[in-house]
Image (cartoon, rainbow, N blue to C red; front, side, top):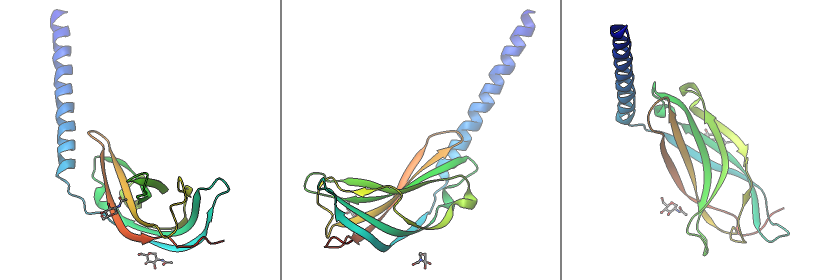
Length: 168
Ligand SMILES: *[C@@H]1O[C@H](CO)[C@@H](O)[C@H](O)[C@H]1NC(C)=O
Ligand SMILES: *[C@@H]1O[C@H](CO)[C@@H](O)[C@H](O)[C@H]1NC(C)=O
């Protein structure tokens, strides 16, 4: 009896050691992977641009988002969450970040994509700062691993500017 309990315990300890070792190896091989993702975004159209009755600026744009995030995927990658944000500064805030589009990439086969879409989430300023505003479009991602730490990074695409006048 005594020896059976002891052996079961030893076996469990051994399995846990192997498991911990495999997790460590998989996180390590993830951190050794140096990905080289790329992204381009074009603002194809300004659909409309107005001041809301409450006084906040709102704009609707059509975007052409192309990205190749295949190199983010390793055998330890469960999925990748991506979002595209418009980022700009205003006198009140040094960083305003507005998510315009997001998606979950389930596998490497889906990680190279071209999306033609109007903004999925509303592009509203907390004020009337958008006319002529220079902004960056930043593609952010979170890599969700099967084991280990989540990794986050981004590509900043600077040099966009909103129209100087409202448009219907
Ligand atoms: C969208 O972007 C892709 C890649 O940059 C480009 O090949 C394509 O022509 C663009 N589409 C439009 C409608 O501009
Ligand atoms: C936009 O990108 C430029 C260049 O990377 C950076 O210097 C600037 O701080 C960015 N603006 C905002 C509001 O994040």
